[in-house]
Length: 87
Image 1 (spheres, one colour):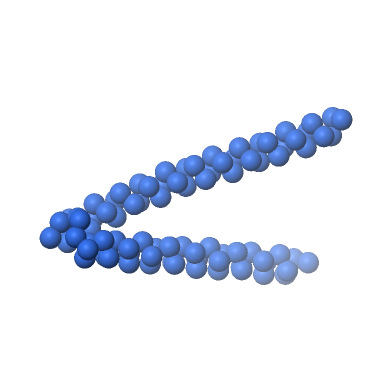
Image 2: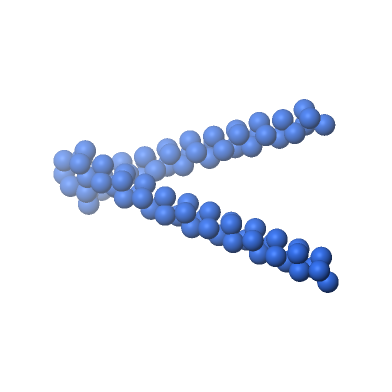
């Protein structure tokens, strides 16, 4: 019975940490979203609501997403190689 309570407590804590991490990730993403949009409004002289500025924004966000995804995948691959090397 005590083992089940301990296991439940650990799972609850793990889930709370994951939720908090996801929440902070969302806040960071929204901050970057606003920063990139503001930068594009400054750079593109026609204003921030034109189709050109929206396309520039979409390209920048896509490039960042691809770079981050690629980097994380590469780090995960290195981590797997490290684990194989230790066995």
